Image (cartoon, rainbow, N blue to C red; front, side, top):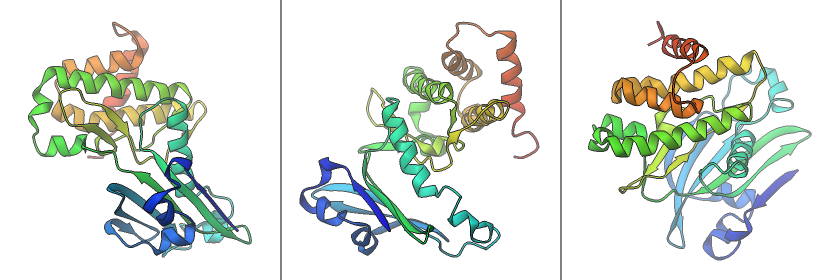
Length: 255
């Protein structure tokens, strides 16, 4: 059985034809961006707009990683989690890529393949590239503050829902070019809801992932300002200080 859905805003023109069905999406040819044993990402242009197409299959995963077949029945697929998380971000008012088409095929209850299509976020760059390129914007206090405030607000909103990104790294944060940067969250196939006490650990992990590059790129004052914005406070409490110690120690001995 194939369950395929499309954003009605993209039902016409070349995009409408290209993303009309799961079969059509798997026949598309484009520039390959990434590939691994169970998925690939290509990009192609339709009507002057660039789209990213992620296609997932059972692929060459080892049986142990597939729980000897049980994962294909019971385990949530990465593709399904990714489009559901994009939908959650939109519902929560968090800026992210526009979902154009999505769906999967299952046979006898088992996963066969899936795909999702998103529209390009134009004129953007991920934060990790800015760091590795030694971009001068990271030395502009106003620019950093504008981005940091947005990252803090998005992270706080996710965590307030009991949701953690699970891969909240600089490479998954896009910002627009220009004097007034707009932040976007991308690539969240591993995000999900957790309950305490596991939620607290996962929240610390999210914040530690952000700080992994921040401690190299930003000043201590800027990092503290981010945490205060995230916590919604003007000064640290004793509980905040304990959490910050956990954040700073999270990757100790693993780097």
